[in-house]
Image 1 (tube, helix red, strand yellow):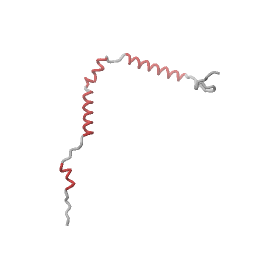
Image 2 (cartoon, rainbow, N blue to C red):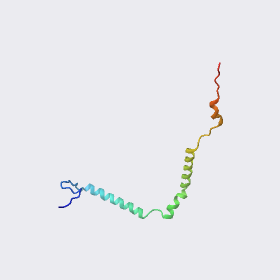
Image 3 (cartoon, one colour):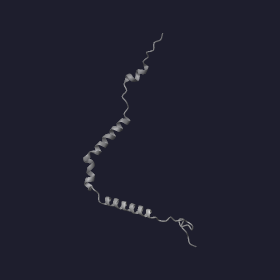
Image 4 (cartoon, rainbow, N blue to C red):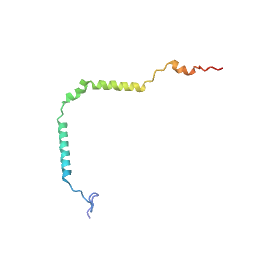
Length: 95
C-alpha cells in the first residue's frame, strides 16, 4: 500500500498555472535579483557609510532631543510654599 501525503489527495483540484501568474512570478524574481545586486554593490563604501551620520550631526541631535523628552517626562512643575499653603488662607468673614 502506498502512503499518500496530506496534500496529494485523490480528488484534489489542482490550479492551473496561467500566463498572468507566470509573468507576475518573473517580475518578482527580476525585482529580487535587482535588490540582491544593490545589496552586493552598495553605493557607499564601508568607511563612508560609517561617517555620513557623523558629518550630518544626526546622532548629536537625536541625543539632545531624547534628553529633552526624558527631562520633560520626569520633571515636576515648580511649586512655591505660598502655593502649597494657599489653601489655608481663609478670607471668609463670619458675622
